[in-house]
Image (cartoon, rainbow over all chains, first blue to last red):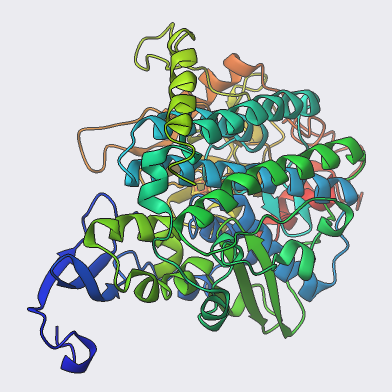
Amino acid sequence: MQVSQSQINEDAIDLMINMGPQHPSTHGVFRLVIWVDGEKIQKVEPHIGYLHRGSEKICESESYNQIITLFDRLDYVGNLNNELAFSLAVEKLMDLEIPERAQYIRVILCELNRIASHMLFYGVYGLDAGATTPMLYAFRERERIQELFESVTGARLMHNYIRIGGIKEDVEKDFKEKVHKLIDHLKESIDECDDLLSNNEMFLVRTKDIGIITADEAIDLGLSGPSLRASGVLEDIRVTDSYSIYDRFDFGIPIGSKGDCWDRYFVRVQEMRESIKIIEQALADLPEGEIITPIKGMVRPPKGEVFVRTESPRGDLGVFVVSDGSDKPYRVKVRPPSFVNLQALELMLRDTYLADAVLVLGSIDIIMGEVDR
Amino acid sequence: MISKLKNIGFLRGLVVTLKTTFRSSVTAEYPKLDKRIQVADRFMGFPALLWDGNIVEPYCTGCMVCVRNCPTQCMSAEMKDNPKYEEGISGRRKIINEFEINLGRCILCGICVDVCNFDAIEMSHEHELSKYQRNGNRANLDTLLEMGKEYQSKVNWTPKQPEKNSGKPKEKVIKPKTTGDSVTPLTLDKSLNSDSTEKDSAE
Ligand code: SF4
Ligand code: SF4
């Protein structure tokens, strides 16, 4: 690995440290090459591609309904949000009207998925900082959400539930009560998690003023999602470029002030609370009716191309679909938030201590399945 | 700010863990039959073929629609002429001869269930299938039907389209020239030639 001399402090004895690809804290198979001067990081070089499965290429040989199973496996923590992004793209291309009930159920499940994803982040981030307890708490809560998913979609992780035109099958009759019970429980446990970690002095010392990225830098690098909002930029696609039925709900967008690790952590904790607000409103308005617009035969969108962006738990998830009128897409391109957010790592890590590298990496919440596709 | 709040946040955390100490445990002891978590009704385990107890034959006609729609190409099917149709016991002109699903390759997506027009396949609750051989999970027709029977008795399964898929022989002598599209033998032919799912329109 050659690195140009000008980028490194001249007097430094440059020591290259290799982290990953099989490292427990890299959140997947991800290799980070770090040049250090003493304990200060001078330069980092992320190496990706260890989880490359060629999903975009496989999409070209699968029919539209089969592709949803592939999208499940991109961001394997926010599956439903990924399914939604692809379905929205194809629906836009076909000009489909989605039944109200399906829209509401989609939103409820996607927001629950967002909470589950942020819960996972919370737990793993505690672990990154050296605390084991938050992980156990977070997994316990995430498990409750997944139990609900199992009873609704039939699977705990790879749901394949959202269909082009609606959803696969209607929810059970006691769905409303179940979700009400769940969110009552979640409200308590989010407070509990918050109490446990957010203001812990040791955690504050480890995360405050570490890995700072300013608003301008964040925008320049194309950051999105909670990582961008932590720098104080008010940008949430659910509001600024509203899709599905998000414009009907009243919820806040938490933003940070400094853009350090703690801000990125706390924005996510707050976002869970906002998601609960959305779910409550959606449950109150949940209409009866159809759950899918039937499509005769195979899904065959007309010739054309479409780009849809949605707010996945990690940020701006864009899907670009080109159709040639057949039952298989001509090209599918995904703009994964994790991949773009990963760019900021170098800037965040510059001049921090080596021991903080894992914390900074954890704070942007990458999912390697989405980075490599 | 940190110095002012000295040890407050830490103590708050300790209160949380203290409370948890007196809570009952949430972990389930997995392998123990009485202590494990039961799967949900809709749980999608491995696909299984269903058994028509009235006619004593499988529902599956071997039409291959599921085989063509499987995203991982893990199934194969072969049909044969149904001897019971000749005898007038069954309304299924064709019947499955051989069926294989490589369960090690199946991703439990449920697409095969969605596209099947004959209520012949269902996601069972079976999910513990570790085997010693690499190809140990290639389930053949008998295994799949066995899984299906177990599932049917467990959940009191009823066909989604009972009229269409009852399997009873049609009184074809009385109405020889009907062109109705939901009568069994005709639909069978139609779906053989189209690669589309007709389930939606049938519903
Ligand atoms: S689609 Fe149904 S009837 Fe046809 S081969 Fe598959 S399981 Fe059998
Ligand atoms: S569940 Fe999906 S992968 Fe498994 S056999 Fe059915 S279609 Fe194929």
